[in-house]
Length: 418
Image 1 (cartoon, helix red, strand yellow):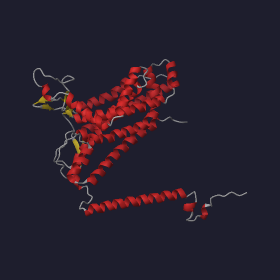
Image 2 (cartoon, helix red, strand yellow):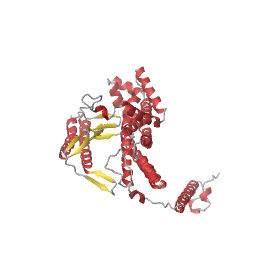
Image 3 (cartoon, rainbow, N blue to C red):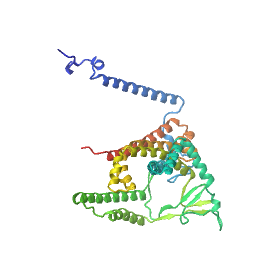
Image 4 (cartoon, rainbow, N blue to C red):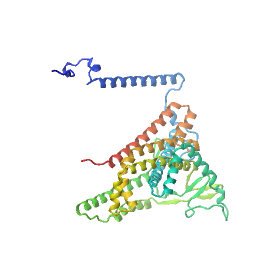
């Protein structure tokens, strides 16, 4: 009895690209790819031709023109005579600032809330449930506006700090001022700074900051090497040498020495005239956006953490308790390290959502990349296609970087199979 099989490769015919199961799937994929590329090419050419007919040739030369508008919250020097490119860079730094602060705060709050939701204390568990359900079922834009309104209405005006017997006083040894115009905190200054490096008139990189980062990275690397040697000693002898004081000194001392060489000191805010001068001014728009995005995202992170913990077998907890470990040690040493393998993948999505939700900053007047490049610059130049494409590309790159970093961390936390 004979069985039907595919014909041998040496008898290849063009009809086999459709009828032969060895080639058919590849053929259809190539046809679909070609059709998509043709459609995308037609759409691009048609868009460019229509813009040319309107006298709006695609060009990014407008980025070199003076911006002509101010940005209230900025991390680098900027004035309205700088270029649109520098204004976009200032907005990008503001976006990254909110994203970094928000992800850190949301992670800390989310882990705490997620763990407390599983608490045996009925009141604490229910309060955390109310927090989660309240934040994740209300649009984040409403939380941003509410946070802004609370900050403006509840904090005192700068005038309340004036006089011999003022209604309000500065906090933390007269170094922090909480006002309805924002929070003023001490500013890091360097009396013997190394200056900045400027790229294309838009990107400024502080040499002082680079030096501090390099020293910190080098110190942490050395500290980890010391820790690995301690691990090897423990693996070989069963006794772990005490290295925490050496590792701490390796990280702190070089940084302190470098700060001393650079002449590091703090500039404190002072009430002068009708407002505070000096220090670092964190506007209410930044604080409101940061708090709202953090607390909103933390509600989702809490559910992810709770699900990750519940995915670990109860026998792990019972076995750790049988060894005499306390509840907090069981959670930090046994449960959470295993739960991370479940927590990290969905946590990446929450970081991406927080970063993209920061584009709602314009609702409270915070000038991020959406408010600068895709807001004022777009309106002034009329370059809607170019500005939107640049904005989309920037968010895409930021999201890919976050995903890549978290995926690398996720790979390191995976179980090593034999």
